[in-house]
Amino acid sequence: MVAPGILYLYRVLPVAFLLSAATYVIFSRLPQLQGDTALGWLPGPIFAAVLAQPIFFVLRILLGALWTRWDTMRRGAIRVPHIPNRWPAGLDNVSKLGKMLESGYPADAFPPWFNEYGETIMLNLLFENRTITTEPAYIKAVLATDFDNYWKGDRIRTMGDYETDCYSGPVDTDRGTSLLGTGVFNTDDAMWKFHRSMTRPFFSRDRISDFDIFDKHAHDAIGQAAARLSEGHPVDIQDVASRFTLDSATEFLFGKSADSLSAGLAYPDSLSHLNPPSFWDHPSNVFVHAFMEGQRLQVDRGRFGSKWRLLEFWTDRIQPHRKIIDQFIDPIVDDALAKKVEGSTLKSKPEAETLLSHLLLGTDDRQIIRDEILNILVAGRDTTSATITFAVYMLAEHPEIAKRLRTEILEKIGHSRRPMHEDMKTMPYLRAFINETLRLYPPVPLDARSSKKATTWPTPSGRPLYIPAATRIIYAVFLMHRRTDLWGPDAFEFDPDRFMDERLHKYLTPNPYIFLPFNAGPRICLGQQFAYQESSFFLVRLLQRFSSFTLAPDAQPEDTKPPASWKSSPLKAKEKITFGTNLTMFARGGLWVRMKEAPKPTEL
Image (cartoon, helix red, strand yellow):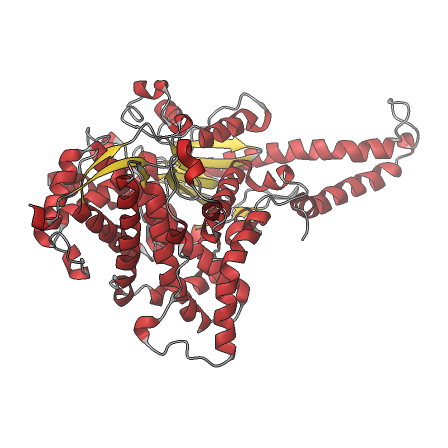
């Protein structure tokens, strides 16, 4: 495999070499430059060839700026407010974004910029444009109304690139390919449509309403949580939810569970010695650790744009983690491919069909199948696990809401009956509760696209904003969901009733793009209903068994507790935990809780 830095130079240097070579040839023919230069040792033609690089680089930047200014004026537009760089190439803001990923709060760097410059801003980092926005109208253009002008990839810039309307250059997918390959979340155009067409039929109503898988793994997960609580220890509900969703997702996708719950649940850090070696070495734990590390590294690459290869010049740091991931997935894929070769029936019973068997009907390409399975695992495990985790966080913080939600569940389903698909329609407060959790704690707090051609976004003033070609568009869903002008003065408050009372019709109904936990447009999450059903099912089972929830700060690692400075911020003041952001959001250090078992009906 070619080293990332070598690949970057291979793409960039040919044009640079031709420029220097042409300069050398031209200047070598000038008699006055045949001798040494004023440096006393460097021949004139070589000096000119070397000097050509920085001169051309500066000219390229100046010409690009002139083009952008001319094109902006031609369109009668205005430029997006630029955040000033104090250091060359915006290295100060690159550093600030790095600290943001470590701060424990999503999009931490953005609010001060928004307060000063407005809800749409432009950064120039390492000579590449990044537009950051929380404006629903602009996000709608990116995701839906102007969908064809945006893609997931980044443009690879070379010495000869200009940001013109006629851009049709290559796409830099390597930043995400290291982890996600060519799966549905990491591709564009024909390849994306291919993956979408393969996976869409599988997520039918018949499949998402099959609760047998959910019940088996929810029973195991909640039972283990109850056993740990009976020992006198709190539980990390994020660990519980992650194992439940991983086992459910792998059985749903592969027809065979990862059986991560067989490893047992984690003890608090102070009692981690109670976890046996088999816990740490369990294949599912090794897989999850590699998966999380791979995501962290991929997100960190984002602040360097296409130049991430220079930071990982000789070695792709994600590749070792991807190898561990493949060791977990490959036996399952290989077994399915072998059965196909042997002529086994892939679809003998429609109700037994898995996504893996469905993919095998469309392709034999092992890498495509492996990548697609991994992409869907991100959606099937990480996002639903985050929803359940933050839902329990809100149950612990709002006991009156927990009581009301549990009352609805017991009235509609009872203390022990397994919920069915039809039951979910009869519990509006449960759906409102999940929606409010998704509003304040969206599993994907930040997402991005890149513009293909220069375009404009309309503004109330009548003069549109100019968006250059090859601009990375980052839309901060987490912050948009907390804007008081979009959600009302109580936007920072957790209140499920906002999805049921007059506020729904005042804010969300006329402007649905203010609520995007599942994205929107042609790339809207295929598993949206699956996620609602799985998280709803787990919460029903949890509230059937437990009647109250409290946080366990004694078990929460100290370095994952909010710093004192958060108390002075309206955005952060209420938080009792800090957050991590990979491809999805999670509770740093877990979410440790104590739960009180409800008396059984016979004991009432």
